[in-house]
Image 1: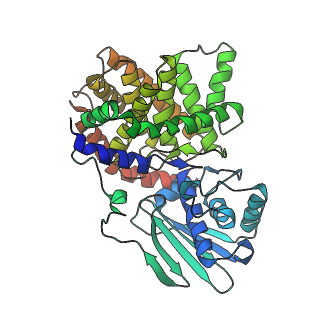
Image 2 (image 1 turned 135 degrees about the horizontal axis):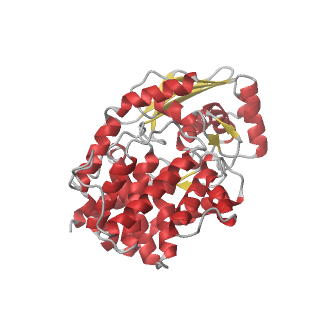
Length: 432
């Protein structure tokens, strides 16, 4: 057992599993706008224009998703809301203090054609640059490579801040991969053996994402995927049970999150949907078997850390739906709760990669709840098969004989040929 990995594992989970209010791509734009306004030390009355430049991937994920508290979709309203009422110190919860009056002001900015959005010619996969103009001043904030990493700040055309390009203690956590020499076995050992006090913080994922799930069932958000399952059960069209409960409660959380609910999700790898996908199936299984608090905490840690491990070999944003990889983390936690060991967990992850690899990401939007529920369903199916020793083998498709190699094969697909797929998806979305 390699205890030397454990401090790094704790650090990466604390970095990548954080509260986020709304879809993290438009929220990143809102954050840049809020910081720019703060640098100018002005309020909304003094803003004359807002210019937003984003990478193609960020444009794809920001075009069709509801910005929380606004009832509107798109990067324009995200930038305006961030400029009017964003809390520049709140990171991914930058819009948490947004009021109805703030939204009315932001909408008026859009009506006055004060906000422009375009695709920047940059190599960064995740990139947003927001420039706020007043009568005689301007400030630009560039966020890149992660949703909250400020790369540069310009005030009145002069660069006043640029991030250190060297991997110092501050920036190393943003760019380095702590899993270079680690394996799925190491993650399993950590999650199941680490001192409980060191990992108990992960329980907040249950608290936040379960609250979102309840909100999704009680409100009219998005496509109402979770609520549709619930109504279908009440009509006798669906039977209750573990699978239905996993689909219902996981989808409901995504419905609320993508539908603009003013409740934060606990994210994973920069995505609220990935955080939901890594959390809610595990929570439902834990409740189903009457797991105690320690079992829930360890299963959630196993799920979230495994999801980060799988995602760490892929580009931050890609044509591969992130809910699928997060659900591969969930299947680890679910299988363990149901009595499985690392061998069965490996079989389950292999089966999921054999099942749903290649599900495309065509931007953040309300229908993501369907992909989240589809991925959760695959996780349940793969976990139950693995408990019986059944799964997709290394003789089939991109699945290898060991789970770590399979994970890397999936990453080669996401980072390789699917980059062209990503370009095609964006072209379709922009021109339809």
